[in-house]
Amino acid sequence: MSLLRHTTALLPQCGTCNPTWGRSAFVAPLTTAAAVITARRGFSSSSISSKPVDLASDVYSPKTAPDEPKGPLLVLHGLYGSKQNWRSQAKGMAQHLGRDVITLDLRNHGLSPHAPDAAYSDLAGDVRKFIDDRKLRNICLVGHSMRVKHAQSCGIFWHPGGKVAMALTLEPHEQIKQLVVVDIAPGIGAISPEFKAYLAAMKEINDANVMSRKEADAILSKAEPVRSFLDWILRKSSDLGVRQFLLTNLIRSSDSTPYTFRLPLDYLSNQIDQIGSFPFPPGTKEWNGPALFLKGGKSKYINRRNIPLCEGYFPKMELKTLETGHWALYPEALMNMLSWLPVHAEKPKEFLEALQEFLDKNS
Image 1 (cartoon, rainbow, N blue to C red):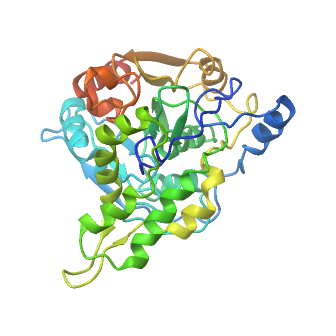
Image 2 (cartoon, rainbow, N blue to C red):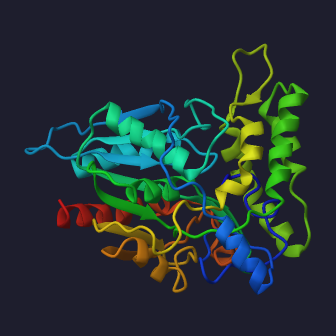
Image 3 (cartoon, rainbow, N blue to C red):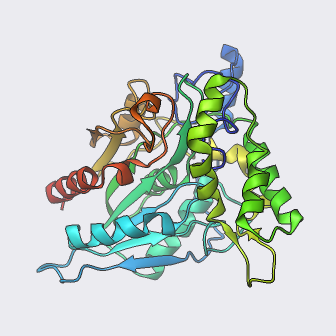
């Protein structure tokens, strides 16, 4: 999802997670018939986009070239993120794994072009173009999902990286050799309406001609309703980190010009419903290559309900659990209520070891 108000503002009104498709998007309470209709509508176009854009990228190479050439790691960030989020980790990955690590900005993020269409097929088409243009081979594709969650099964989910990686891998290709999915399953579901409040706050910042990040932060904080004592705790402990993440997208051309978000907010507003989708209904696609699903031990995003769904798409998948949440930056007392730091960042050593073991087995 995006990373606007860590939990409370993006907090849904406490609904349920669709047990059929797992917990990869928040689903408001529905009747059985309505749930089926919603699920079916969640599948977007299944063909790769015919209008791909050129993606911005960074390449991190090992200081010492390996004895034998190795295919690159291609890393995809989550919603409202950018390749910048992986900068520190990518440097270490390149050295440890002895191969190039390439990080991308997906369309409508970071330094990549803006476009009105952003179904997962469109995003996957952009990545395919990047691969084809550079004639990359033997790729290990890594996709992560940025999300925040509330303790009581309520969640806000920020999907792109992980789902884009899965969608691209499920299309016919020869370049991708391994797939790594970090703490997300290929589920579908509706997006919380409060998501719009954050987009509205960002639009307000653009219109307000703010001259400091402090002014922008004050406007963002207004999109964070407090409904309970728990919400008050969450705000005190997590709002600042979430807003700081969002404010990484706030830029200006000079000290004398106002700040604006580099995100195309109108496009993102129109694309909200697509965030909870997935291009391929269960049973229609599968990839028989090696796939590693990394799950945070305290995270519920990959769970007993959606693991069979993952196996349906990726029959040779391997599931590995790291003793971490999807995010974690707060005191232990809060760990069961929220999470903030991505799996790869909370446990970088364990993440690298799992990645190394997987690549060694499947080279």
